[in-house]
Image (cartoon, rainbow, N blue to C red; front, side, top):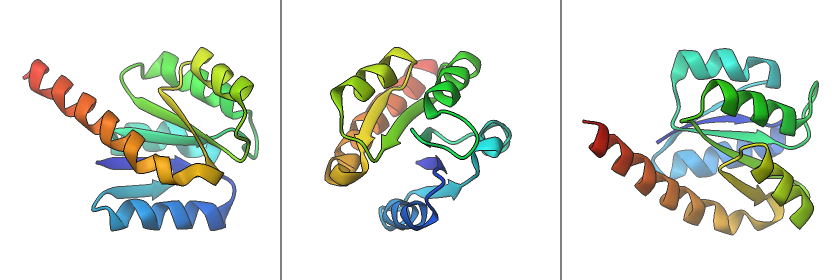
Length: 125
């Protein structure tokens, strides 16, 4: 599976990217302003967007992203493990939410989305 990761924290981005690559998946780290153009160019199956971003609210990015690319799997990541943030992420269209402090659940979530994604592909072929 190919991932597009947008998070201003370079240390975290590198860490998560390495975890993803060690799971035999691909990961491209991009700046907030490059999310849309990078998505069009690379067409990843999953986009990971941080709640806090350099130039924008992660909520705004997710909302705009889902309007333009409704089939894309978009997961919001955050330093905050808060139910209100989780609900807001869902409200703006995020397919999932994961707290940075609870990355142990990240691959469980990704497995679920992989199954959904590949079932959808089978149905469309």
